[in-house]
Length: 72
Image (tube, rainbow, N blue to C red; front, side, top):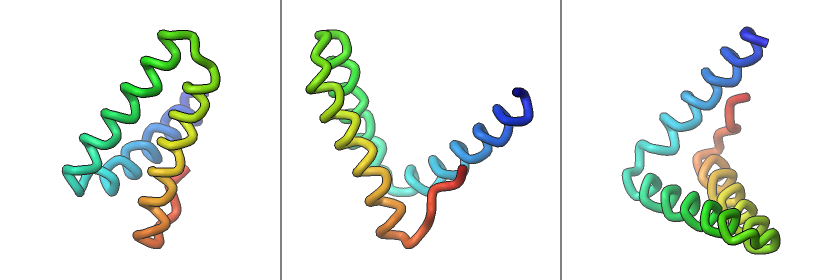
C-alpha cells in the first residue's frame, strides 16, 4: 500500500504543478471545491454529482488544452 500511495502522491503533485502555473486556476478550483462541499453538506446528491462533474471536466479540459495526459 505504501508504494501505491507514493506513486499516487507523486502523480497528484505533478498534475497540480501544471494546473497551478496559472494562478487563475487556483481560484476556479477553490470555487469548485466549495460548490462540491456545499452540495454534500446540504445532502444534495444531484448537485454534488453536477459539481464534481464540472470540476472533473475543468481539470481534464485543462490537460487536454496543454495536450498533456494527467499523471497517474
